[in-house]
Image (cartoon, rainbow, N blue to C red):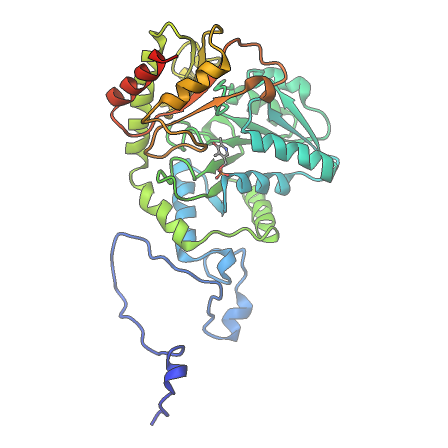
Length: 388
Ligand SMILES: *Cc1c(COP(=O)(O)O)cnc(C)c1O
């Protein structure tokens, strides 16, 4: 006869096991720090790098492994690591492949915190960060030196929207043994086959389209070569990067509708961007699917779709005060950073402070087109333009 446990202990120890064979579409949310081993031999034989079993919550649970596997499959890669934000995913790549004395090349139009990270690594870790013209193409070969180890690309830059020639950049980098990482957030892995175009390391801010809910911060790094994924895994462990099962389950829930949402964002954004072309207040529409956008031909050649993010340049006769007022007067478009959710957003940028050689005249305003009816969004913009 088993001695009954006191209620205090029974709160914690309970032999009940739910019957096996439960089937449902959602991936279970497995929260865990401690992960249990059946016996000491199992504990001794398992290694955290081996993702066929579990060792510790930080190294993965069924929930996080499932999202990693799905993201790798979407991208056509073999390995994926999750990070607590898109920026943490960028940092993971930098720390995995850069050591003091190395050089990293970053496009001049890169996501600003990536630039800041380059400057910080230069100041604090003896790494050289150099910035290149995103439209440089094969000309990048001339910038690659003996210490260049990593080359970042972003397609397109998420404010000024220039679309780089990824295959030409990859070719030049690979000729000199340099790794190419792509911030593929804009295409969501849906509109651009990064590995097929030569990229070695694909990074995503899942915070954007994969989440789609404006409520989760997460990043991912995807590779398809074991020597790269091993270096990333070791760095991931040493930096102590982990994500919560709850956040992961939110992304898993959204993933099923990613393509539908992306296509709707794409169609609405192209519709509104084309409408902007008819407006006398606007001199250029920086949307990769429109000819005003530097790198438009490259987009046409390499991409199968476009995201809901684009920028416009106002005629130089409008002051910053006026275009700020335009943004303030929008009702459906809210003011806020990030993008990829159901809500439309609008942000003005001071390009002269972001780019050393920005020559465009006129104020730049960026739009994130959400899932609202584009007819309502255009009416909103039209009303705000009337108050310019
Ligand atoms: C948002 C964003 C990131 C960073 O993602 P967070 O999850 O916000 O850290 C990186 N790159 C691009 C292009 C982004 O838009």
